[in-house]
Length: 281
Image (cartoon, rainbow, N blue to C red; front, top):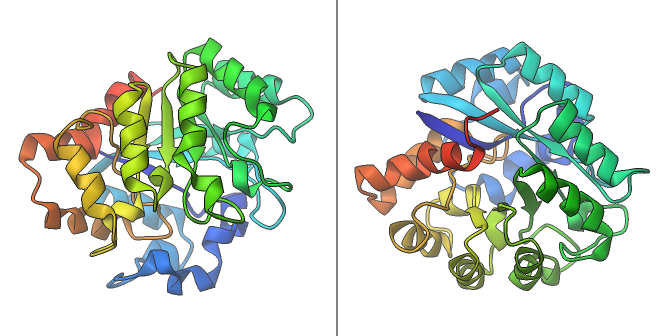
């Protein structure tokens, strides 16, 4: 089964997020896009469902967001409603933030009451930007670890005011503090490719989700993630389109440039995510 591990669909508050702004279609993440699909042009959820099916994607992991006003947020109730509409397609990662009145309580609600598959944090996109190892995240991390669910941390070149907010050292410190909690690094700390591969090589609880930083044709660093897929991290790298930043089908076909063997591609395009999430609840 093919699985897209990073999707933000055209539904309710999602379309008010910065990633759905029209200018994103001409941003650096859109380099090499050959044609925008109907779902993005018309902001159509039914069209996205059809496009996922046409691309052979049987599951799509939807990431929530709890961020500052400039970037927008999505209510976890909205995520639950989306899953109720398409329970066999969408796997939900709830949003969490230390700026909430009760970060641990909201994390537990996501994982235990709403039954989400994990939680995601956007440290550098909070009202006051933070780094992933900031002590303010401890209640969220403790709750996630106690529930035995994966933590997704967004960390890339745009994930904060400067490159220190995507420094893999912060991920390493979190991984060291919570060695039994799976940590998925969204954007895989690009452009710090070799360093984050080294962190994941050393810490077996770290998974990489490079999304479009691996899918943009010719982008520097993509071949570094591909080398990790072929060797030490074959079982801990996830495919994600980054939709709507890039179309789903093209994101998958653009991986052909790496020439992965069939078994390796199967792990990257679905097998690893299935193992990580243990049944895709």
